[in-house]
Each structure stands twice: as structure tokens, then as C-alpha cells.
Amino acid sequence: MEKLVITACICGAEVTKENNPAVPYTIEEIAKEAKSAYDAGASIIHLHVRWDDGTPTQDTGRFQEAMDAIRAVCPDVIIQPSTGGAVGMTDLERLASINVVPKPEYATLDCGTCNFGGDEVFVNTDNTIFNFAKIMKEKGIKPELEVFDKGMIDIALKADRKGLLVHPLHFNFVLGVQMTATLRDLAFMVDSIPCGSTWTACGIGRNAFEMAAGAIIMGGHCRIGFEDSLYLEKGVLAKSNGELVEKVVKIAKFFGREIATPAEAKKILNIG
Ligand code: KMH
Ligand code: ZN
Image (cartoon, rainbow, N blue to C red; front, side, top):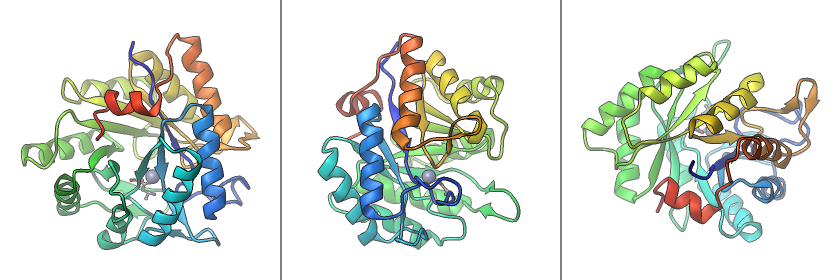
């Protein structure tokens, strides 16, 4: 089987230090968490940034600072800025994360509207999705297609029929938010994407390691980190993103999958 690409979602926009004191806010904390994940085997950093008080922001300058600081400690890591931002941000605000220099090779593209618990709704209309896809294509940024349910795969394929995406497509199945996260769900999602596409899976909360194991066995790739899971196991908070990545690496080794370097990840996922 192909080597395993591990994406570390080190920060997120929703989790806080009250949930886990190791969630990074400052630039120094973000760079430290990125390095811990990279040293443990992550080749991609999925990046959200915060102001020092923990407020999520898509500010270009803050992303620039964070990306420069991450590159200073992990020079070859692939950095994937989020264009999802936090619930309630405008499209213009969300797109500011990709205006950094050099231009990112990779960024997220959320492919539908999603219930985020309580009254929170993460809004992505068709026009938002098509507009983000068009801008990323014009800038030469590979989108990771974030799909929280099967309907979002269908919306991504609508964008593809409009010529807004470049093949091969890469999907990230985010399971356990809007859709449940069972191995049956994962198999259904894998079965629903075009042949030749690549994919990553992540399970939110207690589903994190089951989805990682499923992806490892089924030939996909894994995403893990504080954005998705704060715990190493039931009742045990992870002390760093590196600890979470280490656990995925252990599962991968158990099943005989080697870990991709950033250079290998670029080839496997056709980035750049
Ligand atoms: N924070 C969520 C509202 C992404 O990074 O593209 C959106 C999100 C998806 O995390
Ligand atoms: Zn994210």
C-alpha cells in the first residue's frame, strides 16, 4: 500500500484552552505544536490561527506570521491554510488566509452547509463553494475538498462539472459532525468519490482513532489533531499534537503502512 500521509490539524477555531490547556493560540505556541506534529510524522499542517486571547481570525498578517514561524522550525512541511475559518465569518474574511506569500500550494474548500451543534451553522452556499473553487483554481492552489456528508461529495462533483476543479480530486471525509462516524459510513464515502481520487479521513472526538485505523486499512490517509480530538484515550487529554500523531503512526506501523515525508506526500496527493 502507498505510504500514509498524516495531516495534523493543530489548532482549529472552536476548541479552547479550557477544553485542553495545550491548544495553541500564540504564534510561538502554534509553531511549537506544528513542530511536535511534524517530528512525530505529520507531513501536512492544517492551519487555523488565533489572536493571543484565543479568538479565531483569518487575518492575512496573522497567517503570514504563523506560516513563517512554522517554516522556521519545519522547513519542508506542507501548510494547508483553512478557508473555513470559524462559524459566522464572511466569505471575504475566510478567503484572507490564502493571501499570504509565497502563495499556499494547498488549502481547504468546504463543500456544503453543516450543523455545528446547538444553534451553530457553518454556511457554505453553492455560490460560496463555486467562488472559492474558482479563486483557488486561478491562484493554482490545490483544494482539499472538505465533505461532512455524502451530499457534499455531490456538490463538489457539481463544481467539478463546472470545470472549477483540477484532477485528481482530493477529499477529506470529516465524520462525526453532521454524519455519524462508523466504518460503514467511511466505506460508503470512499465508494462515492470518483475513481482515481485520493482521500483522507478524520473522526471528530471519540471517533478519531477508529476513523484513523479505518483509513489506514482502507488505503486512505489520516487527519488528527486538537481541532478534531483533544484526548489520547478516554479521560486522558493529549499533551501535544505530537502525541496524537504518534498514536496514529503506531496504528499505521501495526498494519504495515509506512509514513510519507512531505516530499512524498506532495507526490501522493498531487500537490504543487
Ligand atoms: N471551523 C469550521 C467552521 C476548514 O478548516 O476548512 C470550519 C473548518 C473547516 O474547520
Ligand atoms: Zn479546519
